[in-house]
Amino acid sequence: MSRRPGLSLERRQLLRYAGAALILSVTPLAGAAAKLPTVLAVRVWPSADYTRVTLECSAAIKFNHFLVDNPDRLVIDIEGVEFNSVLDSLAGKLAADDPNIKLLRAGRFKPGIVRLVMELKGKVNPQVFTLVPIGEYGHRLVLDVYPAEPPDPLMALLEGREDGVEPLKNEQDFPLEEKKLAAPEVQTAKKSGKPVVDRLVTITLDPGHGGEDPGAIGKGGTYEKNVTLEVAKRLKRRIDAEPNMRAVLTRDSDFFVPLNVRVQKARRVQSDLFLSIHADAWIKPDARGSSVFVLSERGASSTQARLLAQRENEADLVGGVNIRSRDPFLARTLLDLSQTATIADSLKLGRYLLGELGTINTLHKSQVEQAGFAVLKAPDIPSALIETAFISNREEERRLNDDAYQEKLAEAIIRGIRQYFIKHPPGPKARLAVLD
Image (cartoon, rainbow, N blue to C red):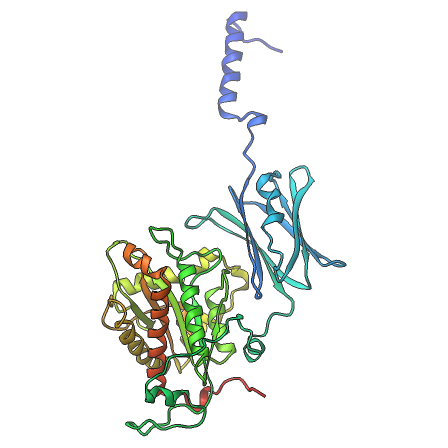
């Protein structure tokens, strides 16, 4: 090896040490290589529609998955993570009555690879995908297990087991004109001379948010998704107690439903109305009152309506949708020529609802507002989104958690529904599922 002339041995050693220090300063040590992703949390969301398993991670991860027969299993290999106590707890997260998964376990498969195994209760169509960080969530690996033969909402409706909720008993007496709406044969309203209803009416109730998507969170820790489900269930019981009405829930427990699927469910049972139940939040904690919104084709009626629609439309990002499986339905709906007439009917419905909500709570706005809500875009079903109260207001948050107030909300909404059908009975074009 040649030596640079004019440098003493001591000087050359000093230069070597300096060079080594410089290399260490820009090159990580082998033991300090890039930190492997860590699984931070696991969550399981069971439902008859599908079961979702979510792994929240500190960084993006790579994975492979495949199905195995005899017995039916879904296997997921996650690369570049180490087995930890969070993964070890996965088996305990599974409910014994999960409709789709029998057993769930995780363990070290080989160095740097963790294997998850789901033992299934039948054939499934799995969707496995990742989500980028949003809101309070980091990177997520989502395992959606759909039954190969999904539940038929029409059969569930006809069999009276849509969510296992029994109708109310001893329902209070209603005014005479409202009783006419409940009669199964053709009736005529005294004042208008118009027929009221001559067939069964189906109403889809959509409890906002659910599962991975909590919706707005009150200062007292109340989740919007829980309030909306409770109010929707109470309302369903009241609707089902009407002789000529039946209600369907887009979700009957705590799981996430994509916005387009909520619309599809309503169209599948040929609903006459679609009502999405929410609990509003705003940056100012003193904002209060109930509101009703319907779809707009031409922009929002106010800045607040526009911002609210934008926030609600982001539910798919928070709840987690596999973008490769998105249905183009929502992109097409506004092209339907019936949309304008449907919006006009939605505005009529909204006015009746708003008037009744005003009897039990302050109204945030005295008129029905409009904006581009994705969940209201069924082209052939009058639809409204009800903001029951502001969950961001401490007083209204307390009321939303009160059983008596939830009952008042349900009563007010069904009064609005009755008034709508008295004045605007459904025509034969919307005749529902064949019952024979």
